[in-house]
Length: 415
Picture 1 (cartoon, helix red, strand yellow):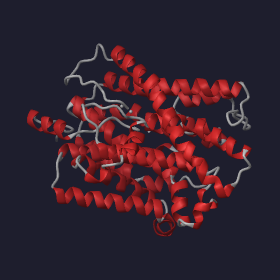
Picture 2 (cartoon, one colour; picture 1 turned 30 degrees about the horizontal axis):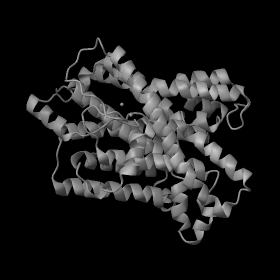
Picture 3 (cartoon, one colour; picture 1 turned 90 degrees about the horizontal axis):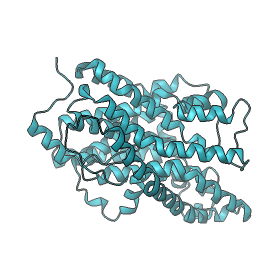
Picture 4 (cartoon, one colour; picture 1 turned 135 degrees about the vertical axis):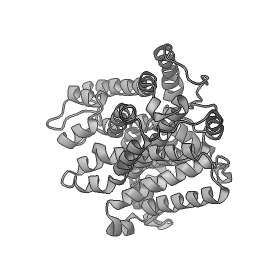
């Protein structure tokens, strides 16, 4: 029987040198544990958050009804507008990979996770923006501002607050129906944080790779079946805990894989990269052909493809194709802040669009101010709220923790 990966000092140094991963989405981790960021993972996260924003705009101002449909394939325009849900599952995979990778580097093995430090980091990253968002949304509800009032029968502001801060907003929506858009985005955070509340406890209880890895594999492979058995409640089918946790478990398995094999040949890494890219594009662009064949299995293709891309980016951190995409990588670095705040911009832009006559043919023009404004709001929140507050909280909460590795100042951005 073997403990969960414990490496000799030389091997651990090798891992640390090769691992340029910075922080999450996790939909939540984005701060660097070591001094550099992994540009490929940031780029993938940037693509995911961009698809989320395009989805929420597209539900209200669809590109396929604009003049762009005369020059671009409708399938492409629909792919840009209607893959926000799939993008969240990409985030889940990245989150599982980065959180587990960071824990392995800090503590040497998942069986040796420092519970206090783990939860302190999660709280420091999640709580400031989450609490601020809930306060702002509560004030807007009490002021009766359109788009922010909770008015569905069976729902109330106090109960929504408890659901948001208690990480069961997904369940609350499954029972009562959709909340206003700014509240609704918190469904994924509920799944992610419940996973991370239980994950280190499971690691400490199992303490053996031969126990933990099969458990993670079963959970990861359960994705098509957990979605299928939830038919009958559309909201709960999409937002239940197990499907999201299956995607996160996929990422954790990837972290164990790259910790065990921190490097691969150029040929292997290139092949894994292409498999991931083709699989992801197939799900995003050709789901109408995949769905009749695979049904909910297409989500497993999505998570597996995302994992291939993440693993390839971990093995190859010098991808030449990343040059010139700094703007998209920056979106990835700000993904948590943009995710929580972008609906403020979406609602404002849609109201302006309607006030100007709701001309669907020119609807694509409203994306031009919406996208940079989403980025700007996320950047402001990151600079003035999340980063300084997280730094102070970590300093206070981790001051008494045992430091197992030299502390490194985190880079800007989600951990």
